[in-house]
Image 1 (tube, rainbow, N blue to C red):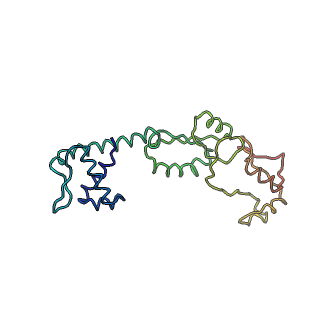
Image 2: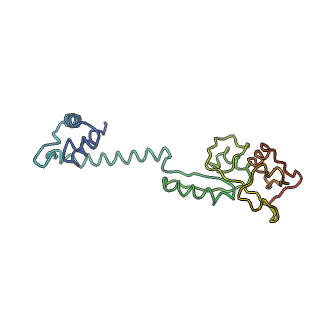
Image 3: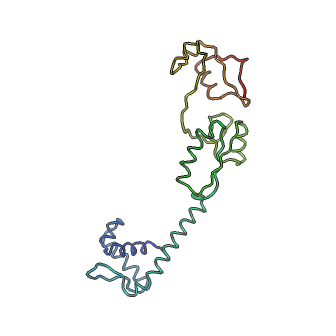
Length: 223
C-alpha cells in the first residue's frame, strides 16, 4: 500500500485547507481533491468534511486518524532503518595515515565527518610505511588512507589539498631570507633529499627530476 495519499491527508489536516496543502506540496488543488477522494474510496469511509473552520476530519476520520499517524511513524522508522542497513548512518570507518598527518590533517577531516555522520565510529590508525599502509588498504584492515600520493598504491586517488614543500638552508645562505624558492634557484644549490627509513618522498623526487634539480646521492637523513 502506498503512503503518498496519507502524507497529503496529514498536510490537508495540518493546513485545514486543500488549497494550502496543494500549494505547499506542489500540487494543484484539484489534484489534492482527487487524491483525497481516491483515498476515501480505498478506505470505504468519508475522512474529510468542510466547515466554516476549513477542512476537518469527519467523526469516522477522527477514529481512524491515530492509526494513520502510527502507520506514518512506522514508515519513517522503516526508512531510517533502510539507511542504517545500507551503511549510511551506522558502522565503523578506519582511516590510516602517517603520524605527521594524523593530527594536522586527518583529525580536522574526521571532526567534520562526525558532524554529518554522528553514529559512525571512526578509528584513526597511524603508520609511517607506505608499503604497510598499502597492505592495510588491500586487506581491508583500513578503509581509507590519507597520505602523499605514491606509486605503490593501485587504488583510487582523491586530491584533498596541495601542500608546499619546505627547503631548509643555513643562516648564512642568501636563500634563507626568501619567502619562496624557485626551481631555478635550487639548481645552483647542493640539495640533500630528505629520506626516512621507509624511503624518500616520491612526489618531491618526481618534481626534482622534472626540474632537473640534482641531489647529493650519497647523503641522506633518517629518523
